[in-house]
Structures are given as structure tokens and as C-alpha cells.
Image (cartoon, rainbow, N blue to C red; front, side, top):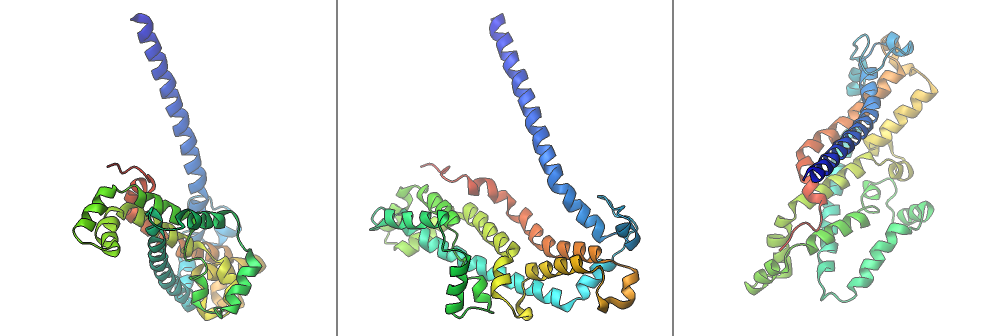
Length: 298
């Protein structure tokens, strides 16, 4: 009994030590992720003198809101934000509809060629046509300088589609069979049985699609030349690039004495980041259940 108790105590000490190491590792990782973000916030709220003298760390020095005032007074920045919000909503809705329509049939064993279609989808995760063929395809389809070029080419993610298909497969078949016996069609079963049971994964994948669309700017850089159609990330890219060329723009005139380009750049980054951060807490509770595909048991 004594030896057994000693072994148990040793296991408990080892477990506590492992827990401490894991917590320290996670804490350091979180700290390394948050510190640059806090620095950007501090720079956006600091005075010109503090930014130029490089005294800003994670706390604002010489509190100054002029950078945010300039950003909010920039009509083009607000317009880009509006375009991005609409673009993200439309893209997310269409992507989810297309993913659901593709994933649900792939869960049916009666679907002819199901394995073949699944292999084709997986194939696209490892091999793609490349940047130039994709650009030529968008050009030939006449989608250059239109928002459709930012929606259609990346409408379905193969990774998200596989997650959704796996989640659908984990729903007990007896539920669907009961619906069929009551006279429900495939579409009716999908809408009334499958989708209501899949809200966690639907919320999670919607957030994946929304964040992906919100943060992406490379496709807009290639396909959009009309500045009236710039999404916020492309606009932000321009702000960052301009700040690397010159500290102040000629149009800022008297304001040059109060803000510097680094402050405007930091404020622009916060302006583009905060909206998508606000969405996270609303959907965070679905993350665990949404990503635990296959956890539903009959």
C-alpha cells in the first residue's frame, strides 16, 4: 500500500510539473502574440515626439488621437471598410451555401462516384493551377476590376468542405431515416434535421470564411485596379507601403506637426482589425463543439 501510494504521489507530482510547463509555454506564446499588438495600439495613441524618439513600448506616450482622427476623416478608408463588410458578408453566405450543397451529398453512400469526387476535392488541397493560370482564368471570365473576382475563385475551401462533410456524417442516420419515413425529401431533411444539428460547425466555418476574406488582400492586389473598389486590406497595404517611402504626405499640411506616418499606419491597422475582433467573442463558444467533428454519437 505504501509503495502504491508513493507511486501515485510521484505520478501526481509529474502531472503537476507537466501542467506547469504547459501553462508556462502557453503563457509565453500568448505573450509573444499580444505584445506586438499592444505596441501597435500604443503607437496609434502616442504623440509625434514619442514615436520619433522610439520611446513607445506597450503603453502610449503623450496621448494623441490625431492618427485616428485622420483615418476616420479619410472618406476612401471608410468606403473601403464598407466594401469589405459587404464583401465579407456576401462571400461568407455564398461560401457556406456552396459548401453545404457539396458536403451533404458526399455523405450519402448511394451517391455514384462519391469516392471519386472526394478524391478530386482532396487533390486540390495539394495541387493547384498556380497564380498565373488563375489570373488568366479570371481575366478570360471578365471578372477583372469587379468584386466577383474576390468572391468566385475562392468560394469553396476544400479543407472546410471536408470538415463539414465529416460533421454531417457523424449525425445518426436514424434521424434522417425517420424524416424520410415521414415523407421528407433530401432538401427538407437537410434544412429541418441536419442543419439545425450542425449549428456549431456552421458557425465555426462561417468565421473561418469571414476571417479569411477579411484578411486576404493578394487577390485584390492582382485583380482590382479601380481604387473605388479597394477592400480595406488593400487600402491598408497602400498606407503601409506609403509610410515606408515618406513619413508625411504633402496633403496633410498643418497636421504634420502633430502626427507621423507610423501613427497613421498603426491607427489604420487597428481600424482594419477591430471589426473582425469584435466578431470572435460572439462565435467563440461554438469553436470547441464545432471543431470536435465526429463527437456526436448515436
